[in-house]
Length: 127
Image 1 (tube, rainbow, N blue to C red):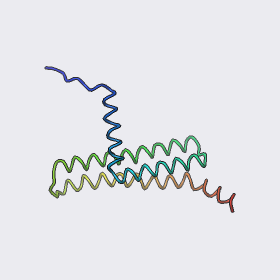
Image 2: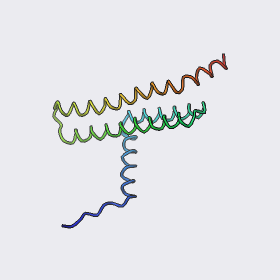
Image 3: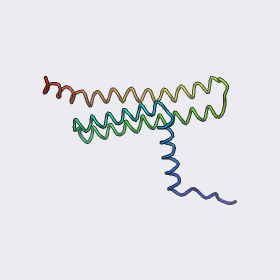
Image 4: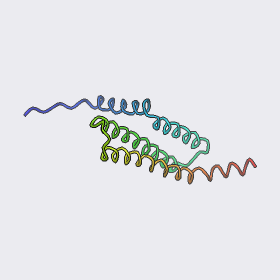
């Protein structure tokens, strides 16, 4: 039996980066997540958040963006398999979207826990 040769590691990374770029270019929600990542990064820089807070933010960036990419993949596979309205197709798409929403909402709560004390401190200095 002949073994298939795997793609070189560089090609594998290339495919992965292409997937990320495709998600950013073609998915509205991924663009929204990227804007949120930029805004949180700017706020973190402005407020000089701690290393632990940066780590939490980075993990949340990865979680939400990663789930959005998985959601996009699930939707694409479901659409590839069937054009008909099927309950299992709906379930797959809805639960994948729900995972993204859940992570995004929790990320907002955690963002408030991290950033509101800095905002209140700045407000006290200004007013």
